[in-house]
Length: 422
Ligand code: LLP
Image (cartoon, rainbow, N blue to C red; front, side, top):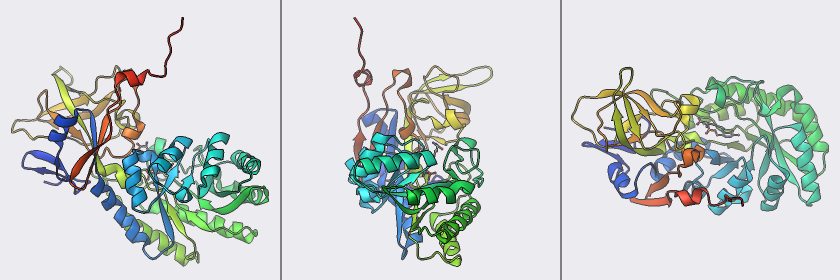
């Protein structure tokens, strides 16, 4: 049986496998909570992006924040990707993983002067600038260090991506980007400031988008701006269309990346912009369904209103359910021939919001391992140490082998930088 979302995750008999690895065995060997990723699944998710752009000048910049483990970044760097980063920390990570700085775009509403300086020294491809104030500061930093910063303005197209309000970014009320009606003025300012070179235009309207309509609406708005900006005598080079393509957590039916890119390139051509290099910044769609979080059932706690299955993974390991009420499938690593009961799957953290799944039908006993599916994106990368819980270990299955790509954090590491006072 293959599970929806990934052809790489399937039951063989009663046992759940990712690629050729039994997840129950990995949990026995490495302990839980444990993240496990399939490199083949990541490359398989990248392939439709590459197919969609075949024959076009393009750059796929993996959005580092989705999963920033070095081995994940290395996988995409070796496959020819660039990276979208949003902090100095992410810059250091992508460089440590072997990325070429001239394939890195630097996004984010709050870049510090120090981050700008470091990115200029490293030689990033482009800064995606999100405000007029940031533009002024970037110009100052570039001049002070004798560098030129290539920039795009991230414009806010005021398009509804029809996604969760916390991950919708292209509406007027969002903090992101430069308002559509301020864009031309801001490009004029950018062209006049020293230390800056106008390179392109950028937008990103949200995440977990499951239709191509909002992308085309945003693209039209961006191309309107490109035409107005060039008419004002400011040449633009590339179009960066952001990330945001959704994945299947349950029954969503997002378009495939090649279908989406086909629609976008057709519109770009129809409107006479076919000569422009195109960039995208996908995160979730490259890694989301390439990973699972394994956890052990500690206690079954039947109750009058609810049955609880208390597991050893918690909201600090996987924040998405608590933060967005996100639905992520939970499946046993070994199927039992027993009737299922309905459980809320909850963690040990002292918060009622600490749940991984609600009202799930599971045939489970204490000691069994469960897999939370679609946990390759925004899962480990959003983990915290709340309740002084060390972060999980991570495994990458690659070339038929399971590699430990991050060790489990131990308690001493968690307070290493702290001091007692006299
Ligand atoms: N580019 C920019 C500028 C972004 O802000 C993002 C994501 C991406 C690219 C990648 O978007 P993706 O292809 O992954 O949708 N933590 C949330 C998702 C937050 C997304 C933030 N921005 C979640 O767990 O659903």
